[in-house]
Image (tube, rainbow, N blue to C red; front, side, top):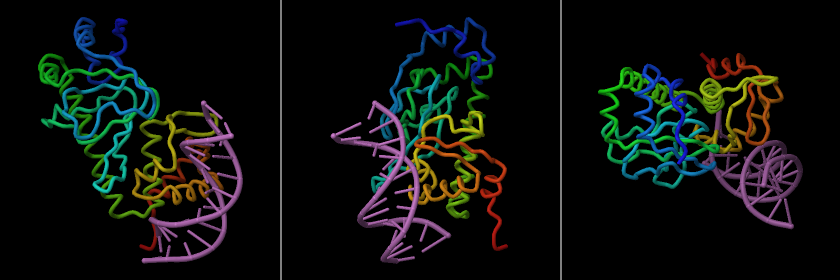
Length: 233
DNA sequence: ACATTAATTATGT
DNA sequence: ACATAATTAATGT
């Protein structure tokens, strides 16, 4: 197995404050693994034995309803921890983590979490901050689902994606990983048809540009206006 | 205001 | 050539 380079972790928030020697300790405990696109890093309900860091690629966190329908709970961009259920005291993973693209993942046994928090300066606080952000995001989404209508929900979803995983291009900000209309519908509790129609309409209005599995936002400001959705007050 | 159904076309391997 | 994605229109709740 090739030895991991220490520079891999220096840019990542929970590890940013650590000395090179500490980073070495952590890397030597890590198990690196490469996944092709569309594979599960871990499955919902499986024993939560490890926690993970996404070095490169993109992860979709998916829950399956009793009816067998998929709900996309969130997306994890490169550089973030995920699958930290063990740290929260869960014995199984509450959702499945799928790779949206080919991805490189590090993982550690769940037991090490508490050692990391105790030993490494900044790890606990940074990880806590991250959890806080995610919980906040989930709450926002719940409010959106309950109050907004589909066009606004989809607009919000797209805006979140370009904020978290945006990539500047010639004519706007592109979602940095392949995403289908079906995916968008599964994040917003809608259908791929509605998403398709809306994207087509937005394209006509010059707000987005889209191709198969690609969405580019050319006019973020107008999308924000749509996402806010001021109507019949 | 939206889903569903179904038929049609485009796109990537 | 085949499977997967996207569009579009018609119909339903």
